[in-house]
Length: 267
Image (tube, rainbow, N blue to C red):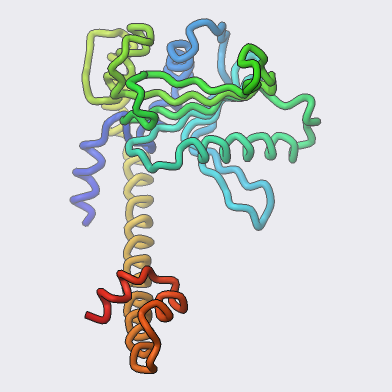
């Protein structure tokens, strides 16, 4: 298993969220990325990235683990997430991340009127909106008058490495092409590629990655075993209810299974 994990580590690209977070631990690389995403914004410097930041508002709340979390010289907060697959829930996840960041700031004693301007950014391999764009920027606008902005200082940006429309700068396009696996002569992309190669030689990071992967595998196996046990129990319940004279519709109602699935079990 360890040999397979080593091979997996060596084959990682910038599109892997763990490796992306480590590469973005270099403040210069992270700042250059933000400047390409937001070319009209002037960023003098950023605070050293707080990578894989965990946010827990209270003991019982579900925590958030952020890939990259930084602040610039104007105290603007940026959360950057690398997303390799379309999990169909990214817009709601962006909303959740935004709310958790705000709640954490308030929990530290900041008045809501002093909440930081905040950008939640997802770098995606695929086009989750299917419009062909490379960049989708969302702000809260008035439905009746879209020229009127809410001005709550929140913004969500979804970048698409598979875009087909000519809608972004060549500099940002070069970055997204690199995320998609295409190397170019762009100076910043060369810096990123060199940082990826350097990161893979970091034994501490490799050990951390392998440990996380083993934990994920253990949890997956536990889930598979639990799911199998639950499936067996549910099947036994369906057969018992059938023997007791319940109809397929009644069994479906009692087990919360579709009628077709009940029929398939009983066949």
